[in-house]
Length: 283
Image (cartoon, rainbow, N blue to C red; front, side):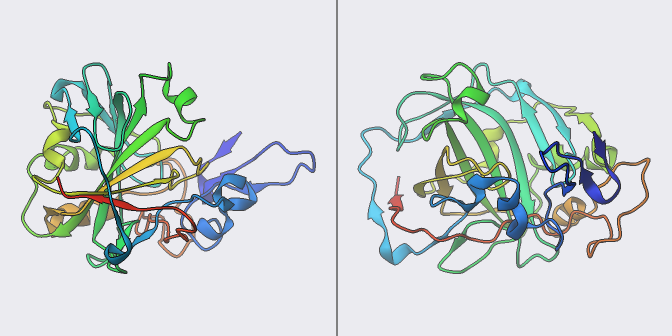
């Protein structure tokens, strides 16, 4: 049973207590996630702060390569905390670098902040960017589905791309053009023209890689992260369009949270690296 007002979710439990659906407000933000999602308190959580001084070099046998089918970008939806583009993975392939086998694209989405100087989930030497795209892939060589892959440490690979304010990004604008149609939680719009995810990746960029987790609940520790060093530019107007999305359903009244129902800050703070190694590749 769901109720969009106040983003409440009734979770069946032995004590029959009600719990807030996760989000980014004070009442249901990242600090509260471990209460309902134990993995969120794990030792290999993401995002992290990447310190370039401490990095090991990745000795990869093969260059990181990707292939996508623009016609397979299907639609964009508002799940209440971001925008998310669903993709038919058939024909896509992410291989090489730190990966064994082939990974196919499942979806991509974005994180951002209420101002242009914050919004990325990963940071580099403490620096935060205006936003961060996540292209989520799953290991089709070893597993038969996304859900099966998400149960294993090598199941998923997420490409992280930093956003910085600058000129308009024309490929990303194919998503931005549909955002007025999905202002409320649960709404979906078709992508009107083929969109090539490869054009969302920075050219000739090295990357950082490490073992981590999903940055949203259930925060499963099943992700090989590849975070590109170079950001891509997006315009201030494009970033502002992200912030106009609402976190509640159209038929419900605006929740009385600190963001007045808008999706303003949807990034998780960085978590300890612990004993993990972060490697870099200058490809």
